[in-house]
Image (cartoon, rainbow, N blue to C red):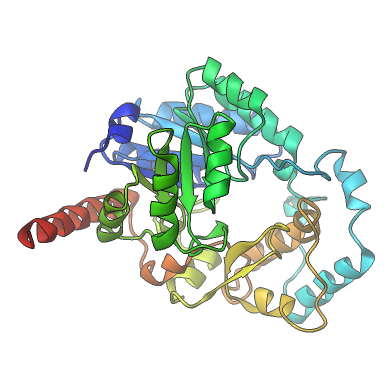
Length: 370
């Protein structure tokens, strides 16, 4: 399974795996793909620097990438306290009431953190890029479209290509005009921030629209080698997979303990119909696992979600509390419709082997049908 893009990156398979876990990202790279570490959870540049040092030392010299969240619209700046004042009291009251109804206890001791995740701020995302470029990333991706031109230029000066997610042809064209090298065509089925157009329609539309001006990675609903083959058949140069790594055995954040978390247990029992697209996670439309938390936000008395990054500031502590509570029925987790295939905990290497084997079998079937 090789394409011109995988050869350019020096990887065995054109599989780009996004994950917030450095342990999973490193395992993806070691298994022949390109692990891409999501940086939004890092408020402290020194913590990100330490994690990337760990990545440098634990990828066997193989390439890896980083993914930042760089929103372009205000309110994106100011201190956490300044932004905190923009969150309406009635929204806070709703969150507090919902957590009480769900039986979610407060955070204890050192686990308590004030304010939202600053990684959603433009300035912090810039610091993520600066820290990353001091290491050896093979790719910088932005989850919210094109980074500013000076950020793209800085990456290019270091010889690092830039990728950006797109949910429509016009977005993809704009990315290329801005200097983006790789467009990640992410269909409606995908987890996290995603658009309105299904993958089967979106992928060839963007491939046709861009021609040779940029490589295209297919994202949204990929969870088997057959789907990788379909993406390449539709003109993509590889696939971008995020959700599928959430139930790998390496998945943990930082120094968290091993073993299935409440979020993993929730994912293992879900079907492909158990997701919902909503703005309650970050303020922008994102696909999440259906839980008691998402159901509460769909009730008539629920307030409208706030714009990014205020919604994240509103719900950040709630997300931490639900994660610590260890109740799989009350969690907040972005995941795509491919969750219906994520029904067991397996090592990354085993998942990669299955993807490659499934791809080979699909190609063999197509060859036999000629």
